[in-house]
Length: 167
Image 1 (cartoon, rainbow, N blue to C red):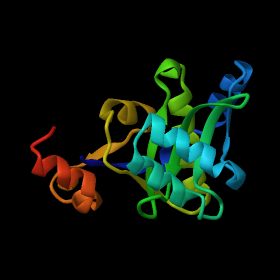
Image 2: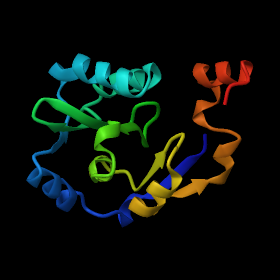
Image 3: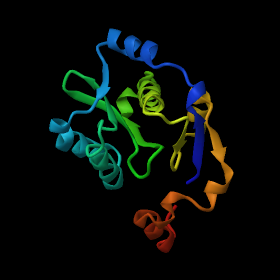
């Protein structure tokens, strides 16, 4: 799992994306501590136990470093930052039935802009999956050396996959 680097000084503002989604009845907002269990349960169901662990950490940060996409009380997706390490974006996920509607991009931009507002000039997208998405949305570039050595090298789930020869 390689990492990507984003220049936060060059990213787009999030307001247009968030307002467009709002017009469709969807909201993007910072998670609140009373919703912690509900959100981390959703993350565990739609992502993984590991992602839920990272999301849980975000509720200890001030401000909470997790954004939610919702339609009424229905969670559509989430995005976290400063979970595994400071200055890292992720984990993130949009429910399958809501992909392709710009929700992931809105969550990404909202989170990265929050990081910028908190004083970061660059962000790392850790253990990136959809490389083309991040290149297109925020001009992220691969950190080549992270293919071999990265923060997740001692991640137990990754070690277990290697031990069991699972891809």
